[in-house]
Length: 262
Image 1 (cartoon, helix red, strand yellow):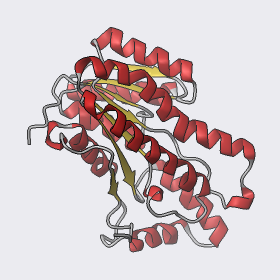
Image 2: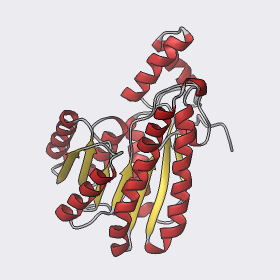
Image 3: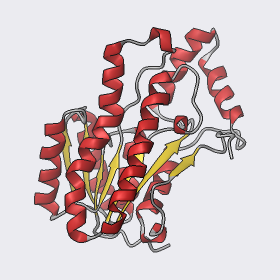
């Protein structure tokens, strides 16, 4: 399927591993020029070199924390200077701790808001003017199935990620006239290191083995398995492509049918 993405410039945040890395690789496979970032310098360098070697594409990579507004600004400026613009921006960040409400702290709430909401604000604020110049752009946020169906002991994620959906809708309404499409993807239980962390904490809380936790998550979805990072990445590439040119302001769940609502 022709996606129309060859030579487009794609920013993928938190792309040294997991869903972000799978997404970066998927864009590289389409011939995009990539801008990658993550906090860990070593894992980012490894991911960058692997993608360059495998896909023979241009990659700009910088290590920084996406909760730093100035760092995001400087990164987007560097991307524009190197590639001449920004066409696609995928916002992404690690998830907050798994806790029930009474175990939460004000400091952790502020960190969750900075990590999973304000980071999206920072990227959108920087990339939209460049997309307006071209009258073409794609902003895609990675959140969670929790935006549609809250998950137990993930109160930070349940609350903060829902705010991202409100932002997505607002940006889609305001900037559709500029040819900028803004959408959200919500993964279900997907085989990543983050899910392994959640399984460890859940196994302690419920006195079950990690294997039992994973099996329970898989059983909750009609497909009876966990998702693979590439499946989310392929959905993001499709939303960024010319094939999805009349889709904006939407949340697309990649959850194997886990969400039980209509």
